[in-house]
Length: 140
Image 1 (cartoon, rainbow, N blue to C red):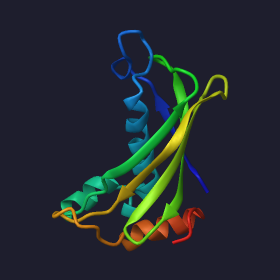
Image 2 (image 1 turned 45 degrees about the horizontal axis):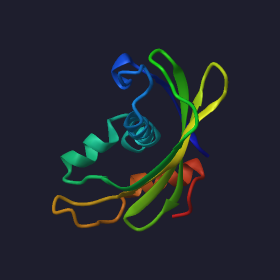
Image 3 (image 1 turned 90 degrees about the vertical axis):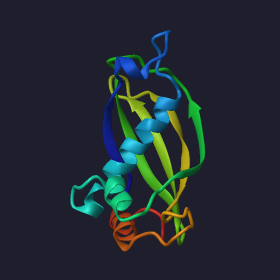
């Protein structure tokens, strides 16, 4: 089952025209991913927890479609769903919906690979796998 994270667009998220700067959507995807996995690390910041242990989860592929702009002060809901989980990788689908109108403003996918300090792929931790399984997302 997907996970929902509320987001608010800040003035610093916008470009000179007052619209959300498109890379900020990917920033919100990371916010949602950390929120999604927060139960796996008992509330500790997930990616920081893994980094302390010598692991990272870099994005290796990303795509998005932008349907409607957001502006500073807008609120939205980010829906995060793990749609694929491999030995050392996972792919997350995201959808962002404007809170005030239920209008879909962006959606896409981002793929990540869990790596060690030498950037060699390493198996996803059991707590990540368990979190995905408990949410009923991608079979792993």
